Image (cartoon, rainbow, N blue to C red; front, side, top):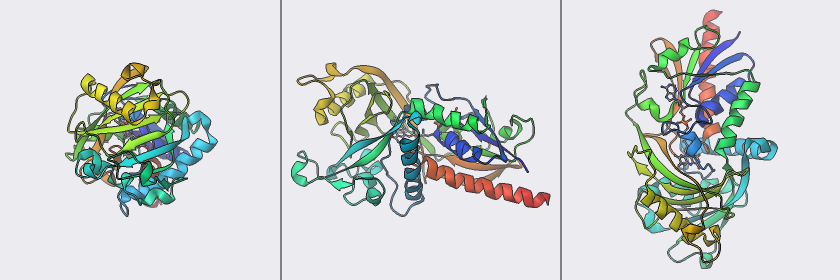
Length: 363
Ligand code: FAD
């Protein structure tokens, strides 16, 4: 029996879910979205991400499980499919206890603690000896992570789905139930997967008040400093961040950032951009030539994305709206890539439950 499935949303959440579902030839999949890879828009978080794997889920939580389950998939893609635009990269993490109560410090509290769960997941995890830490840094660690060139990786996911027979269509929906009538066969979909990110706040039939943005501003430069670096916070503001990551396959280096909750502005703030560039050079002088300041940075673009955060955490659950079976997979905040496969595995198992019930009903 064939299954008609509509995935609403073509960010990393929708594309990863569609990719997994498309591996089963009995699934006929339509991916429906307002924005597709190649677009840059404030309503589309995925292209703006770094993106790397820096786990932040609290030990024992569902979030922990999603990130844990994602590492093997990203590692395999990095090893086997260079055309996907993911590479391994050395990573340095610095923690200052004084950042503990700030928005940025809380976001990174699992990442920066000295004995995190992910030490047994990522390769080469080591604590940095305290005599090698800069003044003011209380602990630090290094490991090998991945960095994803989103401009290559998102189209790669589209390509995998197309190869497996999925169909992509542009559409702007007012109501989630309308997706059931948009399957490319013209037949009604058996299940709709909601991967609309921050737009789940306003999408009819969902209207999730728990969604809110955490604004992330970045500068993309041509300079390549070497390892990825991230800190627990900065002295420039409680919602400002400091991270550096060089993307695979000539994707440039992302200098970040910020974590500005409830701020919807899509316009880069040039004062913030200057602070970002200055503190990245302070922590990593090899970003520029000796003696240079921010004039030594070769800027490709300034950018802003909105991380789709949800009070109470990511929503992965079954729902029924106007008689349409829905599986939600949205609200991935600043961890949509590093939890992408783990979340998609959970969403796919809910889809399978719905499809099994459908088969039983037809027997
Ligand atoms: P989105 O990418 O926003 O996609 C939503 C999709 O739904 C789009 O296709 C949109 O067009 C579609 N849609 C919405 N409403 C409708 C509608 N009504 N009708 C039709 N289509 C609709 N994560 C990491 O794991 N690692 C990182 O290093 C990292 N760095 C980040 C840095 C920045 C600056 C930012 C902003 C984010 C970062 N993230 C990172 C987080 C990550 O980018 C997000 O968690 C992820 O992109 C969310 O993906 P999504 O597919 O859920 O949503």
